[in-house]
Image 1: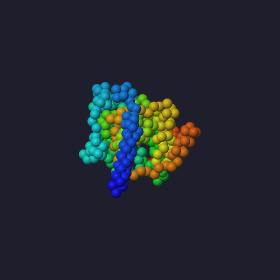
Image 2 (image 1 turned 135 degrees about the vertical axis):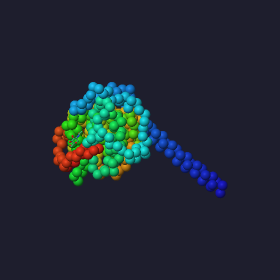
Image 3 (image 1 turned 60 degrees about the horizontal axis):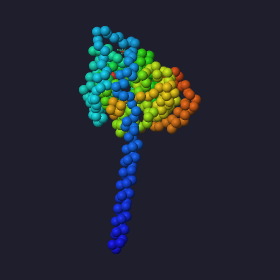
Image 4 (image 1 turned 180 degrees about the horizontal axis):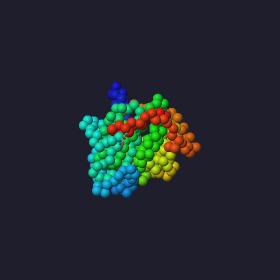
Length: 326
Ligand SMILES: *[C@@H]1O[C@H](CO)[C@@H](O)[C@H](O)[C@H]1NC(C)=O
């Protein structure tokens, strides 16, 4: 009998040692596989001011009596919002000085004009949180900006790339030199995340709470991207061929690198976002195939070949709304 119990105990010991060892190994592997991505390569904060694309819309009138708006203090700010606080802070929202979704600082001459382009369908709850939050965030940065909502009105599969092309067309017609392509479910948390273009396209949403603040892959450009109007036109915008969820952003990255643009990022502490919860859109099962075809044929479909029908255009207080059918 004692022999048997000894054997049992030995077996138990070995089992628990085994389990502990495996768990330790998993933790170690996990740690190292994410380690690099927490610290993705980014611009040195001291170099940011030199890389900013300081352009304002040609239809903005500057006054000699006013000073230039400050931006270095914004870049240096360490203020940040906790992700669980972010969406709930808009109850006493005041829409002072916002007209048609646009704002021009009063006390100073803006250094940047920025079109924030949001593609949209059936996300009213998100929009109700996004608009007041973004107006509060952006007014603090003393930019000249305008929020465009490009809404797909039909029942066809969602086509985000095409909607971005439409939005860019509209913003460029209104002389915006910098475009920020923005998901409606992402809210910036760091005040130092200046909403401006750089000399290279900038992936802004590098550190999202839903992904544990980890950059999921290096060539990611989805979420929030800042790109100059000239660069957007030069790469011929997005492919119009991606229907359903996914693919158009990776294809866009290929377009950027084919034209020699480096995608740059701010450090993680300036790039945090919170993501509002939502059900996943149906994925486009052909997305890899279309991307391969676009690469192979060097497809030129894009900004200059976009087809759509405008249903209507409305000037709302907090945004300019373009409703379209594809
Ligand atoms: C806002 O939109 C209305 C309607 O299109 C237009 O008449 C007005 O000039 C616009 N105001 C500004 C400041 O853009």
